[in-house]
Image 1 (cartoon, one colour):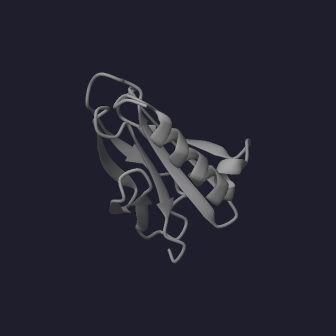
Image 2: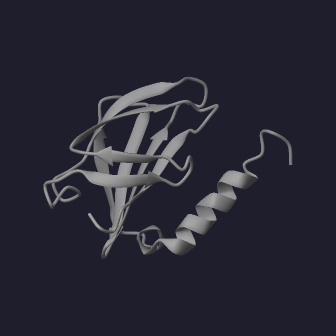
Length: 117
């Protein structure tokens, strides 16, 4: 496995799928609004488990966007504490969220929501 291998990413994705019931369901996807057609965003929820995925569809260029969370995602009306499962970073997300995705560093955010929200 060389430097361009997908093995570490696939391993992480499989671990997340096993740990999050929202990622084990097929019919629980809600697409989220972005202001860049090269950024895809969606959320998956199952019970209290909420995962938000934001992906750069351009494998060659850095892409930036504002991701707008829907009212159901922000049901409590207050910001969410989210943890990026790919980078380890923690963010506070509200209704509108700036993202910058560099495909050479991390082509996506897969964020899980703090259960104490």
